[in-house]
Length: 222
Image 1 (cartoon, rainbow, N blue to C red):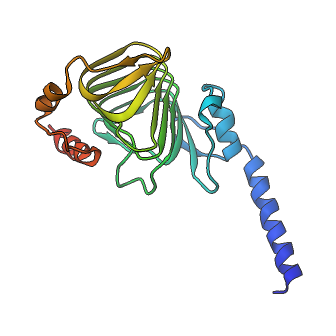
Image 2 (tube, rainbow, N blue to C red):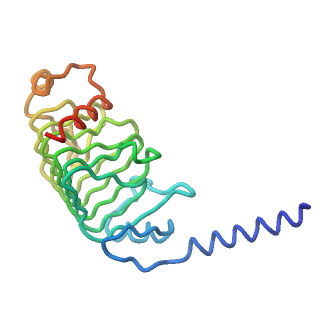
Image 3 (spheres, helix red, strand yellow):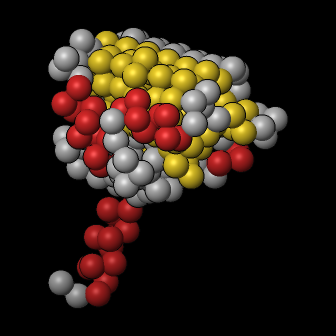
C-alpha cells in the first residue's frame, strides 16, 4: 500500500469513527446501553455539575447508561464507566472486583447507594447525587480516587486514610481511619478514635486496602 492509499484509508476510518461518535441510540430501561462519549456526557451533565472535577473519558473506553434501579442480594460489579439513572442496592458494591479488567473510570448514580459493603478502585471517580448508606465497611483508600456524595453519608466503618469523601449532607461514621469533608470544607472524623476502631475490626495499623477487600469478601457471606 503506497502512502496515498494509506492516507485515504486512514481518513475513511477517522470519518467512520466520527460518525459513530455523533450517533445517538435510544436508551432502553433496565439494560446497559453502550453509548458514544458525546451521548454519555450529555446524559451525565443533566444530573451532575462536573466542571470543578475536570471529568472526561479516554479514547476507546466503554461507556454505558443504565436507566432503572440495580439490585443484587450478593455482589454488584460495574464496568469502567457507568451512569445509573436510579438507585443501587446490594450486599457488596465492589468496583475493584477481578471481573473488571481495568481500574479507573467513572460511576455516576443519580439516586442512592445502599449496601453492606462498598469498595472503590484506584483512579476511580464515584459521584452519587443521593445518599450513600454503607451498613458495615466503606473502603475508599485507593490512590487517585474520588468519592462525592450529594446528600448523606452513613457507615459503620470508614477506611479512607488520606482519601476523604466530599459530602453535601450529614456525615455519620461510627468507626474508621480517615475522614470526610462537608461542602463547607469542614473535616468530619469517626466517633471512635483510630485504636478503638482497629480493635473493633480486629486489625492493626498495617492493614491495607487490598486486605480490607479480602476481609469484606470473607465477611459478606455471613
